[in-house]
Length: 399
Ligand code: ZN
Image 1 (cartoon, rainbow, N blue to C red):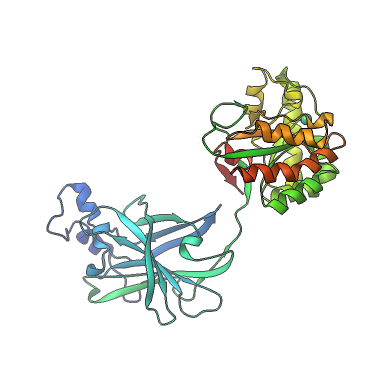
Image 2: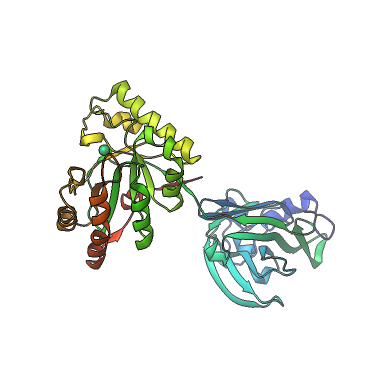
C-alpha cells in the first residue's frame, strides 16, 4: 500500500488536483475535478464474486480524472490476475481514460509468460463513486477465468512532484505477494417478483415454453428429473410443503440441476379465500423449502385446483411470490392416457405457454411416459424450454 518510493504529502495532491492536462480541458469546477492528477498509491482494493459477476473496487490516496489515466501521462491503475502457481500474471485489467472524454473504461489484456500483450479488449465503463475510487463489474468469462482458484494484485504508477517527478512511482497492493480468490458456480437462490401478481402465460414474444410439475416431490420425481437431464432442459416444480422434508434430497437435486421451485401450499389446500389460512399454508411451505435447500426461497406460488381469487394474490405477494397458473392443461392427473397427454400439450402449446403437469399426487406413469415425446416434438418445432422465472423475465437472486 505504501508506494515503492517515498509517499506523497497530501498537500501535493491538493495542489495537483486542479491542474488541467489538456489544452481543451474545460474550466468548470467539475471538469477540473475530472482532471485531478493526484498520487495513485493504492489504499484499498477488493475483487469479489457477486452471483455470476466479479466486482472490482480500487481506492487511491489521491484523486484522479479519467483524462489523466492515459498511457501518455505515465499513469496506470491495473489489476494483475494469476493462475495456479504462476509467478507472472497471465492477464491484466487496467482502468483507462479516453483522451478528451470524462469517462473511463476497464481494459482486459491477455499476457504472454514474458509479459507481452497477446490480446486486449474493452470490458465495460467503470463507475466512479468519488474521485479516489473506481468500481467495475464483469463476468469471470470476460477476464478468462473459470470456476476455481486464482490470485490477484493491484498495481499503480504515476509521476509528479515532489517524489515522483524524475521517475514514476509504483505501488502494489498488497505490498508483497498476491491475494487469493475463488470463483464458485453462481447459485440461484430465488427471484425478484415483479409486474402483475397473477399470470397464466408469458407475454408470447419468444418461442419458448415452461414445463411445470405440481404436487411433488414424490416417487415419480426422479424419473422426471432423469428425462429433463437427458434432454438438458430446465423446468419448474411446485412443491407440497409436507412432502418437502421427507424428500429433502430431491429438493436439493432439483435446484442443483438448475430447475426452479415454487410453493404449492402445505397440504394441497384450497386457499382461494386468502387470509390467515392461505398465509400459513404458503409460508410454512416456503419455510420447508428454505430449510430443505439451505438457501432457496421460492418467488412463485401456484394455487391448488387453480382456485384463485382477488383475496389470494396479495397474500402470496406479501410472501414475495407471484401467483402462476397455466394456459396448457393436459389433465394428466385424471390419467387420460399417454397419447392424450401428449396430443393436448403439443396441440395447445404456443409461444411462452405455461404447461401444467404433475410429478406427484397419484400414479404419474402416464405423465412420465408422455414427457420425452412432448419434449422431442416441441423441440422439433423450434421451441426452447425455460424455467418460469426465466420465461417471465424475473431477475434472479443469488446466494
Ligand atoms: Zn396440485
